Length: 536
Image 1 (cartoon, rainbow, N blue to C red):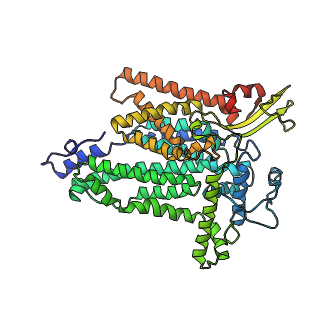
Image 2 (cartoon, rainbow, N blue to C red):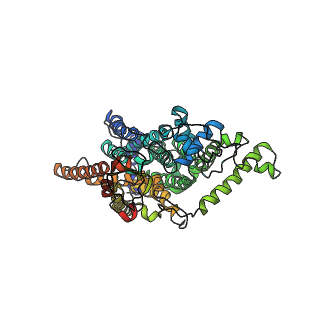
Image 3 (cartoon, one colour):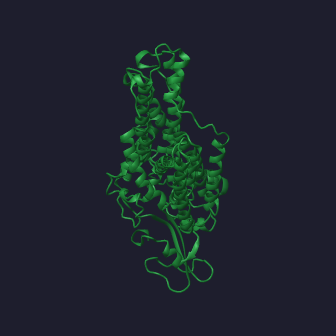
């Protein structure tokens, strides 16, 4: 909660050391003194989540959902530097183990997503080949690392290693993050870079407040406070946001959101330090903000197109020359600009009907998950001998195999209550943590609402899922109670928190078969379809 200048100012006769102690106590809460558990606990949780994600990663041993685009684009980039068109039966060739899948004569492929995610998928294909493990390897790595990230971020936000590990455990056991960590498409990379950028912002908040306390204690900057200059963790956030936009353009909203978040945190810090002209001081110190949140992301983003810029065979690469612009660098950038105009226009105008499309207000309620893969088998041994559409039903001994992109209900349904509570908590207490997670959800969820006619899918929500988990963790922290609470209070809180985590674990275990593509009896598969109108 914000305080007044009188609340936070040290006594006038206090020496510099006393002033510094008072300011640090007001501005920066101490981190938990529980080493080595501060790292060991998150690493153990991450190891658990990593095992889940890499176990049977090859299954299904075929291209599923949009892997048919990104696995082939990544292989093309690996072989030729840019995306090329493939032969019409490329999927069958890949299934048979062939790697020469490009059309003759070679022609550029028109793609409408930036390069970063495909470059990362290409790393796995370079290491393991053009197979299901290869094009899913990087997704599994980044999905696992996201667990470690959220452990450490939640720990820093709550000053509790226990709650940090709870955050990582919830992410480990969420069905949507699990499925997208095992699928060679872009969204897991987008989520990772957004979460990592947020983590940098949280670290910068602590570090800048510590520096501000030291400078104010020395009397630097007068009533407006000192200039902190360019800040390394904000630079890191800018780099990561550039990579996020280089994965999917929708991440640009997080640049706006995090820049505003950092500005609000700086104003709050200077006010808490007892500075009279705290707003003026914040804006005077914000001269580097356009560099960290505009120039750096733009430079990083442009650099991700290096392959396209250095070749002459990418789609639309010679547009500028064909229109009379021949200066080498200007020509390349102008062609890239025109390419973006076309691709973004296509993305905004995409309104093709799809059986698994949904609207953003459906996402938290899980009313329309996405079937990434479904196959039905007959006979005692699973094989592609018979396909049975789930709406038709099957007769005789049948089995089903599905990869359903759906979140763990206890997490997603619980997040609705958690977000409402965080909203009220922020209004009542101005808790920066509640405000931060709400902004993270708004920046990822809000931009989709105006695009009513645009084709959208539930798994787009993955980019803001970490903030849903953080909102739940903040609520669990309040339920658990402070360390100074009575034994009875803490015991009740621990019981409720433990019961919730157990519920998440049971639900993940229950849905595991249809998340991981296990072959199960058709009736058992149908029993998992709780909401048959929307889940089938």
